[in-house]
Image (cartoon, rainbow, N blue to C red; front, side, top):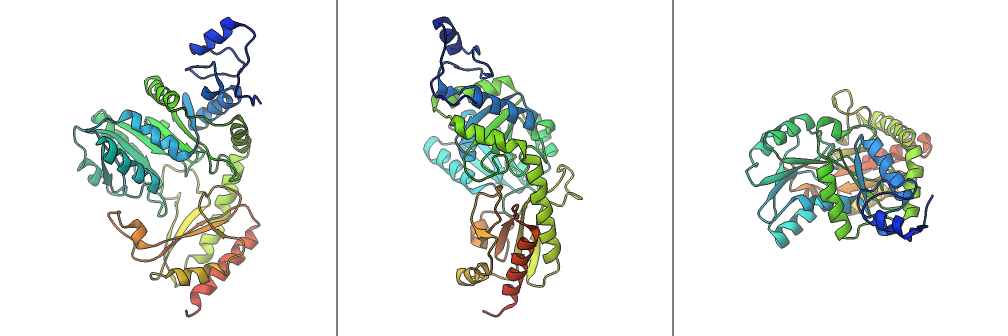
Amino acid sequence: MYMSSSLHFGKLADYRTAGGGTPTLHGQTAQADNSYGLQGNPTLHALQDAVSRLEKGEHTLLFPSGLSALSGLEVFLRGGDRWAMPDSVYFPVRRFAEYLKDRYGVGYDLYDPSDLSTLTGVITDKTKLIHIETPSSVTFDITDVDKIVGIAHARRILTSADNTWASGVLFQPLDHGVDMSILSLTKYPAGYSDIFMGSVTTRDAALYKQLAHYHKVYGFTVSPYSAMLVSRGLESLKVRMAASGNNAQALISLIRTHRKISKIYYVNTDKAKDFSAGNGLFSVELDRIYSDVELELLFSHLSTFSIGESWGGTRSLVLPFQPDDLAARFVTPKNTIVRFHAGLEDKDLQLADMQAFLGGLEKPT
């Protein structure tokens, strides 16, 4: 692993050549300036190559977080343009869209991922980008990616997909014609909840060139040590995701018929044609709205599941969402939703926790 921020050259001519974008150090594949560590070093470039292989792309850029990778979409938008995103989009993306609107006059429109007539109804000649997130956050709605790509290509509109849920293992957006696939490497790829990182991968050299310039102008980079940790995580990615998914299925089977749970949200791969398997995430909609006091009591029964975000690591997590949190959606859930991430702890411990949670639901408050 090459850990230095200063790249060392034996000849001045090699340094000059690297600054023009020609690799001179073993493992460098960046196509921008290779003369300084801010644009990367062999450790970073090796990870870029690995993510490209994972996502079945040609070019990858690394960012300090998943959100900063998503923010790279702004390079394709100008004042007066519009972009479309699902109503269930990862909330920080919605916040970012509001920022672009207020500061630069870039408008946005929401669509229902389960009803694409809501997408075609908002597209105009000002629409320059359609963003996809499948499955969606919290309720795991499935989007017909092929249909969106068809809509976009017919109108020469760019497409991007947040592929974090599948993490390049369970789905490959680029194989379906999506222009850019974006990952939060923080989650399943890194695997241990100890770093932040994101990536953007594409097969289009022109799009990559635009993104690489934006990447350099804003000084985005990641540390070589963080890149090494993600590279380590990729070695066990498929095994960890499968184990997490198996644990989640056992928990879903346990709660499937419980009378206090009105609905279970998860990716049913028997019905979701695009996904090869599930992961550790699922949500349950309870029988009514529960107050924070009631939720605090429910969660007090848990010892393996901790309250927290940033799923995809080894630890099991739980987090509640109220209808008001999802009020921007075309169809708002009526009751409290609780999202679970099944980690890699012993399955019996997770099942015992879920039994305790269900028992808490049965107790009068």
